[in-house]
Length: 413
Image 1 (tube, rainbow, N blue to C red):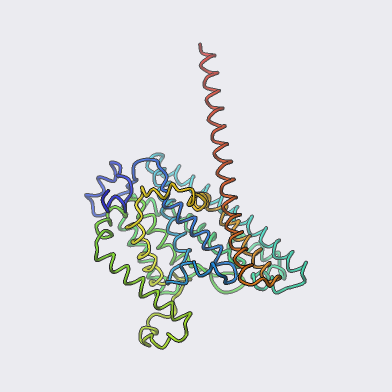
Image 2: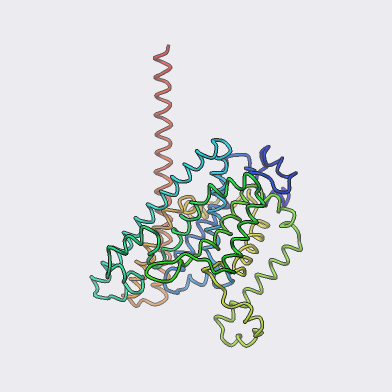
């Protein structure tokens, strides 16, 4: 298999083949309905990493990518969300038309919104119970719900408007807003994919130049600025709809690989100075003044470039048909990635539970490790249960449909 095939995946359908002759093609959907397990694998990995990062620092924290570069699991999650959403609903737009595709997207947005409200309710109940039961108001303060306890009526309205969010609940509101604009993104990409990406870059630049942001309640702004993070989401959609294949020659170049490795090494050396103070004096002052702060809220360009370097190396050395994707050892990660919404919500709940246990019981590094691994095992077990249930439900529906069909045939005879 060639490097281009490793990067771009399966051959393109007729629309994509026509797109390769055009500098800015319309939507091009890869042929075949086989699920892309690499996406599920890395989305599941992102969910595990987000859970670990939400816990107090522990042994497993040093295995998360945020300690070795500028980006973290959030970039992985948003990029894959844009990729998979464009792939699924881009196909729906081609086959069923923009109206049906938009309706399906709005239905998904509603599902995510309901999940967010449900998580918000359970999360508030969990924190409030712990803070009251153990007479420790610091839990409410640390998790950012003091305003809810003071003015629950106003705060609930603000929460429904996505303007009030406790700690660790910032990703889903960002995802909801990005999905709301997916119909427009797909429509523009159906017209000119490259122009759509250029418009996304322009909005990203305007965000930095004009300081665009969404305000939060009671003060401040969104932890993940949608005006900036849309670039990663749109880039994922652009890759899914033919962009990755058209970049295959660039990504397979040795020069590109060496640039990526060099950038990742430089990022690692910079982050090393954050944890080893003795190395801080080795950083040139001019580079520090130019580089800092590396803004996560507005998706700093250094974070975006770091993610691009990681992604380029990953698709270079991990082909779509890698046998390891069928390994039972990676099955828990893949299952978590396939049921990302449910597992993300569970991870937020478990992260606070782990935070509470670690605060109340001084168990050292051993307890940190046990809580982290237990959370991952619970998330994996829930993903397996959801997968088993859906498979059983689909199998039962198929049998029922077959029985009805046989009855109709018998009646007709």
